[in-house]
Image (cartoon, rainbow, N blue to C red; front, side):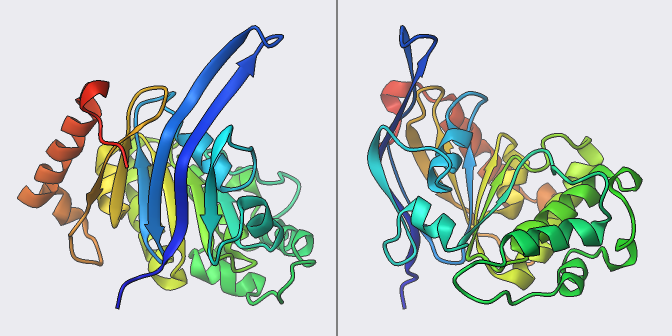
Amino acid sequence: MATQDHIVIEQLDKIFTTGRGERQVQALDRLSLKIPDGHFFSVLGPSGCGKSTLLRIVGGLIEPTAGTVSIGNGSGPREAQRGKEIGFVFQEPGLLPWKTVTGNVETALELNNKANRPIQNTTQEMLELVGLEAFADAYPYQLSGGMQQRVAIARALCFDPRLLLMDEPFGALDAITRQMMRYELLRIWERAQKTVMFVTHSIPEAIVVSDAVAVLSPRPGRLRGVVEIDMPRPRTEEMERSQVFLEYADQLTRLLREGDDHGTSH
């Protein structure tokens, strides 16, 4: 049985006007994608290629210049956002420094208590999900960067959204913590079973976490191709040294280095 698409992006353009309308910058150019329900889908590309812009359009934070985004059963991004169908995790965790771990998650629950459907998760359940139940009374300054991001993930998932949007959530972490957080994220995702759209500029990170990886060109972001990652789950660190992993890395590297005239458009 075919998996239903959770996100359908069609012919998306985004043009930003800078200054006093004197200069226009095109961030995205005729970009189309389909993301199946329940998949972990990464968007890979160089800095400035429009990855974060794409994520913000899907999340209803900004409007496209042209094209459409459909989420779930045909909802637009703003409608899905109002219905609490979308959770966000950004590069900076954005925790309230005067609140404990419990307080930060509870604040999110309180803010989203007006959702159209009842809250399914308790604070305790969310802290257990991200492995921070022992740090419930800790303050953000007492946590490592990786632990702070786990609080941010718990906060994003606390109202049980069907879609999780992640914008380079490990970009500010050191290399060792970042590598560890890949597998921590996968553990959480395998339990939570959400559709994830994950923005990254790291090829190894994209391969480890993803069911598929979309590769964008330098600005304006055009789709160069989608690579299906056919590796067994659960993923392990040993896989990063395997021949198939290296072949995927080579394939993604070649797509990133292609000239625009050889890009793939869908």
